[in-house]
Image (cartoon, rainbow, N blue to C red; front, side, top):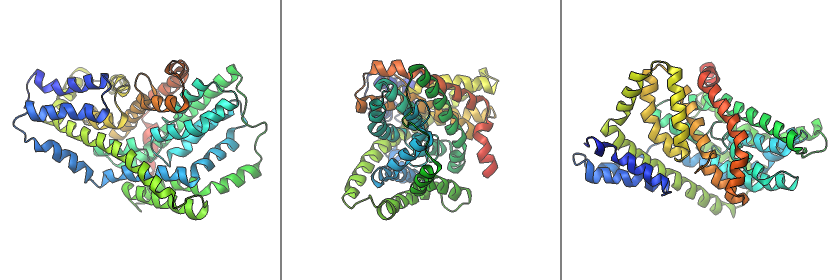
Length: 432
């Protein structure tokens, strides 16, 4: 067991590695290996490997590759394209129509992909070129796409919600239901912001006229099978028909069936591509998770979560002040950490603190998830920022200049969710 400076050396090394842009998994794994090899001579060195391997054998973590695979299948099955078309018919006639379509698509995709990075990549490839074609500034379009992708992980089945539930030992189903209203509130805030900016910049609608009820009805009928999935997942969880992990498997089978037999767009040649994309995405995420789990073993052994809990609870007596302080800390951390890794490392640190203060862990989970997702949107190293500017070929200076109105809108929602717990807890308490 380390003492004094040595106990915190792995934390210091990890932050330094992040700052010099070492890949996330290695930045977590290197200080962990140093700790178990040179600092803590009492604990068997094999424990680091064992903790990493135990994660890969956990049944709840199987939900991550399953929902990742489902998100990939949606893109090949024609579901994504139909949802974008439906969003345009519903709201494309208003000022700034394609910007509103961008936001609404992320809401619809939230129940399908569960990943901010996947949604950011998809929307940048499909919607940003169309926004540019009809006169939107490319920096504006890219920043909006990254901001809208923040909605996707908060609306179930967001992967970051699963990671918090597993790290904090709370119900995944309750986390799923708790994310619905905050996710919709984020969408409303972004749509209001788009409307204001579009009026000042004179961004025109993408449609000259409002879609007729017949057009909307036909497109909703065509998109029915895509829209049914999120509702089916939530109802299945509500009535105990399947577990969240089983919901991931059902989502994959459902998307395959819809793409192959109803929309008739999925082909045998797509299967190797789907498997390859799913494997690459899952491997990256799981490597980070395994490294973060091993790192959390070091934190637990050194009693760092307990130390932080004691420090905060001894000096702060007001739960709202505590939440505000944690918000500031997480916003800073989220700008340097990948969201999933930050969740696994930070949740065990903060959950004992908020429980000691009487804060509901489900409410805190949503607050923490929004914080870390916002980190992926903001400079200097936000993952969604880099995904969108790389695909759209936009300079980071142009992105930074355009992102602030959307960041302010999302921060307002974060404060509302933080200080009004019923926004998160209403649906879980009502339905579960």
